[in-house]
Length: 308
Length: 157
Image 1: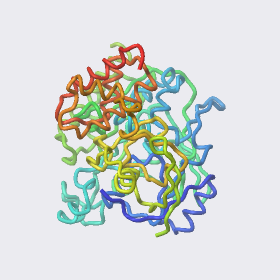
Image 2: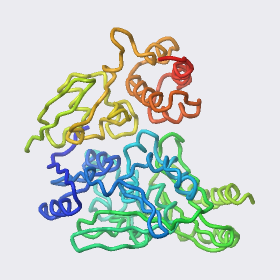
Image 3: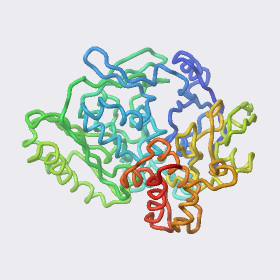
Image 4: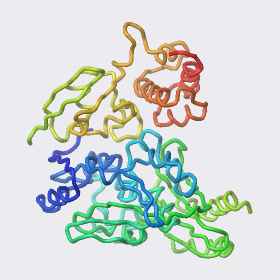
């Protein structure tokens, strides 16, 4: 499979990367591990004029403790992060999500920042250009109707494993773009709109992911067909105590959902809460099955973490 | 399109090339350097057939731009033999019948080599975890796991 043509840049600083982005008038993409971006470019889903490789920017590659927070550089690979002792000791939900992401070789290449900022996926979107032309465009590729629902809404799925875990841990992001710098809670990055699922401003580069530095209880459960590699068809992260817990649901719909409160109350009203989540026939598993697995996996996870 | 000059080592030999920015490492290895032991399977990073070692770590060469490997060291399947002898993993794959059609074998061997290099005594579950990065459609994995285990159990390699 061939990549489309582009110019390649390898800046050493964030400023240089932003200058390149500006020079190409926004027709540029940032490259980290490339495990999401390169396949999408090969499928013709992304056709940038310039690819800006961030891997020489050293400050984006470190994990450090700072002011009651653990600050993770977005270019740290999923593999490195899973081997960082304090992640395993303090944030079991994140640790489990890391080791359940894709497969080991891709964890060694894929980065935590890229994993959070991955695009949404759909059976009718992640296809070759040839395939998509035959079917006609869907809402996400500029068409009028979703191929599954017929509506003018996109229900593609956000399939990061680590983002639900980080949401359950109240992570925040620091972004630097052409318009300046901002720090936002992770949940604010999700628009809930499958066409453009992330609320990134022009040229923004994710510079830091921060998690409160506290030992938490938690875990992550994942539904997929092949235990060795697949994206989550449903992913559930849980962190906290049974008195105050955060449960984040990923893999279904354009952005994760977070429920917070007493564990028992959330679990008992799960059927009702799940109604906020719309699953459609855009993955290889039946949408009803995926939805029905939300309470099943949540119960299983709660039992594993809290033993009841 | 402006070409990019890259210098890197492949199987111990220095390479100096001018490549297109959108050229993948897989294309460079197969088409320019004629190292056709590295296979293209899916081309999208799912199957692991194109696995090579980048500074000792397994990567899918279909997802790596050649422009990214400037100054780095690549090992392909052609580079793991020791003198005239096969690498112990290659021997073990032959002896355990871990090769059928052979298409996944180069990637599988390099993933296994990287595992043993960083963890000389892996458990069976470490081995399964590592090679779950590579898809084989013939052997059912059992013989592959046994071959890797046999090498790991030998005292010296």
